Every structure is written in structure tokens, then in C-alpha cells.
Image (cartoon, rainbow, N blue to C red; front, side, top):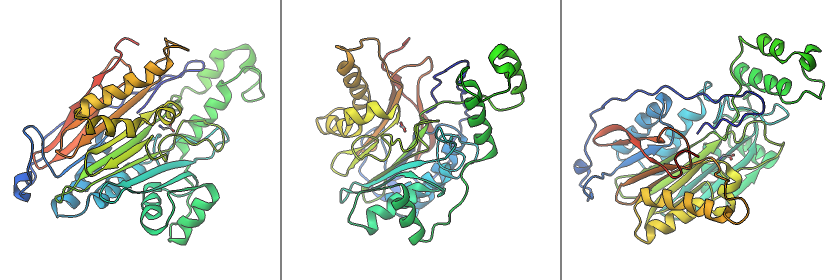
Amino acid sequence: MKDSISRRKFIGRSIGISTGALVLPSAEAFGMQVKSGSTIPLIITSHANDTGRKALEEGWKILAAGGSAVTAVETAANIIELDPEDTSVGYGGLPNEKGVVQLDASFMDGRTYSAGAVACLENIKTPSSVARLVMQRTNHVLLTGAGALEFAKAWGFREENLLTEKARKIWLRWKEEMSAIDDWGPPEHLKDQQKLESWWQDFPEIEHHYGTTNVLAIDKNGDIAGCTTTSGLSFKLNGRVGDSPIIGAGLYVDNEVGAAAATGRGEDVIKSCASYFMVLRMKDGRSPQQACEDALHMITDRYKKVNPDYFPSEKFVAINKYGETGCASMKGSVNPQMSVMTGRGYTKYEGTIAFPGK
Ligand code: GLY
């Protein structure tokens, strides 16, 4: 999710979206029990752009061939991570304040409650795959920094520079524009902000966001898996870890109930254990859509006493074991969307805004 939080004049950019239908094998072909309006197998991503659609098409091929939710989720997540144009996830993600791309990702298998995650992982393009290996090939849940990199290299991942030219130029521009009292930027920086901006006019706009993606899937056996992967808050402090690799915060999956995941301001998602909360709400009979909305209200309720005007920027997605879906964002002028692929084809699900006008 892109979130524009300007220091001077940083404007988040929205992504152009196209829709369309793709005819694929139906859920009934798999002999699945489905609730009216829902269908399984199913795969969703919070990315509602063309890359999100491409990711789901590839993930769906795994599910349609009878493959596991875990593999479908990893396949789809990798496509988003490898997109160099996406400045919020994997390769091409915006760096931290030092210009270093540090990635966070988590994976969870709802059949076994197994989970794996990596945080502050550098130089590896597909952190979700490393998180899957932590889940399946270790007795731990979370590896960080140098240890996560060592583990990835032991499994044959190649170290690569993740900082694309686009991301580097956005970072440099941020350095120059972030303060009038440092030494970044030409001398006229101090006197003439317009001159600085005109020098940068051919470079990409500054993006400053908590961009992340979630992928959740149910396979033909009814097994559920999920992944959350991100480059995290752009220009974050070196070593900062967001919600994405924290099980229960950025992701939670339970075969008996469903799955939920978060994008947005990770600090608030961690403090509220939002994904676990959403799964508990669904366990109590709430629909995925209601569970997403409940979690956003729960977060703002917490702030009521200290800062009633605080509406952190978050977008939540959820599915239940019947294949019903939900998506909600905290605020904004446009309803949040997510990509959904089932036997009925590709659709874009439109969610709700919990606090319109905020
Ligand atoms: N939700 C992504 C982050 O805060 O890092």
C-alpha cells in the first residue's frame, strides 16, 4: 500500500489498474464445498495492480494443478518481489536512511501453524522464499540481518544489489529535500527551494510509504497459507523491523478459520497484533470483511485516550476457510482494492474505508 506522508512536498503516486476476466477451472471441478458467493481454491493479494494480477495468474496455475497453498503463495509473492518497478517490495524497494535496502518477510502454513520469517535481510531479491525455508527447514521462526543472509546463502541464494537506479535517485532526492540544515543538496538549497526542485524535475517523484504485499491462498485440500513481504517503511532507521515479519502482526494463518494480513504503518500493527486479532474475530463468526474493519476500529480505539485524531494508514486483507474475502483501509478517498483469483477467474475486490474523510 502506498502512503504519502510528506516532509516537504512528497506526493504518493497511485497505480493505474485494469480489470478483466480469465476463464479457469471451477472450484466445483475440484469437488470443493463452497459457500454461496465464495469459492476455493482461491488466491488473493493486496496488490491490485498489473503485477498483482500476474502474480495471481502464476499462483493459480499451481493451485489449478492441485499444488499446495504454500507453493502457490511463494510463486505469487516472488513475482511481486522481483518487479524492479515496485518500490515497496523486494528488488527495487526503497532503501533505509543509509541507502541500504533491508527486506522483511514472513510465511505461515495454516495446516501445521508452522511459521518462518526474515527481518532486515540484505542483498536477496526474494525474502519470502527465505522465510519459507526458515519455516520448513529450521526449528526457529525469525532470523534477522547477517544471520538471515548467512542462512539464505547456505541455501544457495545469490547476493545481488537490490538498489535500482530508480530507488537510488528517490533516496538521494529524499536526502537533499529532507532538511534545510544539513549538507545534502547544492548551496542554493538553503536559499532557493524551487531551484532544487527544478534540478530534480526529471527524476521520479519522492515516494515515502509503508508499501508491502500480502498473498493468501487456499488449496484444493482446504489448506491455507500466507506470506507478507516488504521493503518496509522507506528511509527507515537502519535496523528497523516492521510488522511484516512478525507472526500475528503482519500475518496470521489458521486452517480452522482463515488467514489475515496487513500493510501500512507497521508500528501500529505490531502493537495491536492485528492479523491475529482478525483471525480471532473470524473464529467468533465475523466475516473476513467485518474482521478487517473490526481490527481498524480496535487500533483507533486504543488511541482514543491519548490522541483521538490519530488514524494511522493501514490496509488489511482477510480470507476465511470458505473462500470468503475481505479488505479494508483506515482512511483515504478511494476504496481499497485487492486482487482475487478463483476458478471463476480474476476479479478485483473492492473493500471499505473504516474512517472516510480522515
Ligand atoms: N507494513 C510494513 C512496514 O511497516 O514495514
